[in-house]
Image: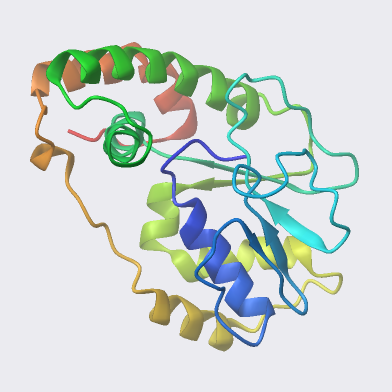
Length: 213
């Protein structure tokens, strides 16, 4: 389970390349590997869980907040400081989903996604419906990618062993780094950012998330 724009593809690529002998293919819909196979849900089967028995990791945003954990499976939950992820998702939606780029559409989108963010983290990260869960905050993944990925690998493999040298090589190849600043966003308004983050301060505090501004 991942809130949009929370580092999912970075984590997915790291795991895929660590477990397999080659980088993932360019297509993100379905990536079959000799050990680790990935399903993107929205670009593949649109079934939850994926019906392919070889799938080991599946992306899902739980937009309707109606999904339940898959019995016997580890649920990986990814989230990010809300204002950062909402800005990134707005840019993505304008480029790829036909959303009109304007100040009014941004504010409408931001209010809607703020409510969704609160519901998502409340359900999956603050009071998760299963004990078999691994939470991955974007800022932790960005600043400590090897440690975060290693912790997840220990939960995936049966013997709990991790080749940290190989994992470090994979992470180095991924060139992990923050690409954009919210202050560079064309509709950035510090007062509006403060308004959104203040409304979500309780959830941010519970998850120990830094403010974006």
